[in-house]
Structure formats: structure tokens, C-alpha cells
Image (cartoon, rainbow, N blue to C red; front, side):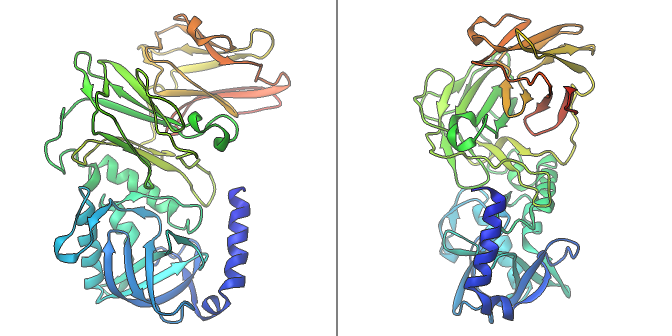
Length: 427
């Protein structure tokens, strides 16, 4: 089911199932301190208890549900607690800090909250999904904005209740760039191999239907240290939801090398690992008012984020290779896409993806482009036959439309570096 159809059905469901709630709710901005955004059903209430950094219990009169409402704050993901008793809180690094901060905000508001919903029936794991605001200094202040901007929660884009996505994606990237909260390199203490230079990229869009090619989504981790291995045992990867992959005993990255974690089924071998999920893990970005996207995060065993990628890029979206590479195409017979380096430095191609929708090519480890060089990526052929200047995509048929098509070179967080088009298509 497409996201658009899902939204329509939820909207209809909300109208049919909760007419009393919708009728008794006020209408107002979904985000209390951002009046120019989406409009929502709005209720006021009182908090009874703060469960963790993104969950609370509250009395919400006139919401049509009755009784105590368990609220899941929309758009944010705090780290997980293991002990929820107020005097004995414990959990992942940063979990208790986020809970304490949310509780502080609620107390400053004298337990008063404003909750809003685009679709009153929407929920997450049984909790009602709501944007939440507290009243401080005579103004309503958006809780999600505060926690994300302070680096106490990840941006958690969801298909419904998406009003916070445009704002939170930017704030999360600003927090990451400033190394605040979760993104502070030593917030959880001195970790293993501290200062080790790392890169992380996530392929969030498999060729064709993501659900039919779960292994088409993957994460690559690069060890940029030219001399030292990086042991990964106990380190873990996750997206913005609760999906988590923990590296097994003996996992490591060789100097100046990469490993790949595929989302789907398989057996670990060499530098390839498998998450063994049955459905795609990453949200595909949208370039509309819903502003969907996602993030990939590498944590060390202590809970520090050691590398990350939030997409699509909205903060500091520049790259050294921009303006340095041009693309060319040969759509007929021995089909290929070429890349030429017009700059003055060698370009490492591994952090970039070559795309001709709906297909995407990942450059292998060690693929570089020297000044003045041209590499051809042939759409058909065996990647095991790769040479320095000829790479093989491994597809079984032609993909470039003779009448018109396009190709782009982008970073994995969606910064476009180069584009070429011909015939009926344009960049």
C-alpha cells in the first residue's frame, strides 16, 4: 500500500471511528510554537507520569477516549530504558538523561500539556501518537523540538503524524554537527579505539520494490585508519526506530577497508554481515510537505555514537567532489555510464552512489578516480572482471532508455554531485 493511500485511509478511519474526539477537539497548529505548519486536532491535559524520554501518561479531557492516556511523543526517539521506576531509572546511555529532561519540562509547566494529532487514531505500540507541548514562560513550547535540538533524542520520521518532520530533520542535523547530546564523542565515557577515523553510509533505496529486495538496503562502515584494525564486537548499528544489529564476536574492519551490513537474510562471511530482517529498515526520503527521511547510527558498546548519516541532507550540504566530476552515457550497445575527474585531486568513489532510476550502483572498496581519468561503469558484466577504469554493474539487461534517460552521482545522504541526461529526460 502506498503512503498516500495509507494516509487517506487513516484520515477516513479517524473520521469514522472518533467523531466525538474530533468534534470536541480544537483546531490549531500541530507544533505549538510553529504556527505556519500543518493544522491538527488539539487538546489540553495534565501529566500524571513521565515514563521515559518519549512517553508519558496524561489525563486528556474531551479526547473521546476516556481515562488515562498513554502518549508517545511523535517525531522523536529517545534511547531505551530498562528500569522505569523513578528512583532507579536505568537503561542505554542517554536514556535517563532524556527522561529527566522531559520530566523537568513537564514540572516547569506544572504538568500542563498541549497534545495535537493529525489523525486521532494514530498510535505506536498501543500508545497514542501525539505532538506534545509544555507551557513555560506564558508560551507553549514543543517538546520534540527541545529534545531533538539538545541531542537527547533521534529524529524519528513516521508515515503519519509527520508534522514535525521538516523541522526535526534540520534540528537533528544541527545537533549532530554541533556534537550535542547523543552526538558528543565521549558522552558515555572513553570508548574503545577512541578517535578512530570512520565513515558510515546507508543505502536506503533498493532497486525496484524495497520489500521484494530487503538486502538491497545496507550500511557500509569504512575504517580510514591506514595501519590499525578496528574491532567491532559489541558495537551496534540502528536506524531511527528500534531496529538494532549487534556485531558478533570476532567482527573487525581491516585498515583502510570497509564492511557491509545487509538488512535481509544471509550468513556472515568475510566483510559481509546480515541483519536478517524480513522487511526494509530505512524510510525513503520524500521531497514534499511530509519530509520523510531517516538516519543510520553506529554505537560503540558504551553507547556513544561513533559515526552517523542522517538523510536527506539539510545542513551543511556540500561535498569536495561537487563540480569536479562530469558524467556521460552510452545507451546503445555495450551500455555504460562514464565519470571523468576534472579536479586536481584523486577522488575516492566508495562514498558515492551512481543512479539511473530505479537502479543504483555502489562503487567497490578501492575505486578511485585520479585527475583527468575517466571510469566507465558498464551496466552488464561480472563485477569480478573489474579493472581500474572499467567497472561492471552486474545487471542482466540494459537499463538506459534509448529515447531518453538520466544518470546522477550522489552521496548516500542525497547530495547531488553530477547529473547527465539525454533525449526526453532532463536533470
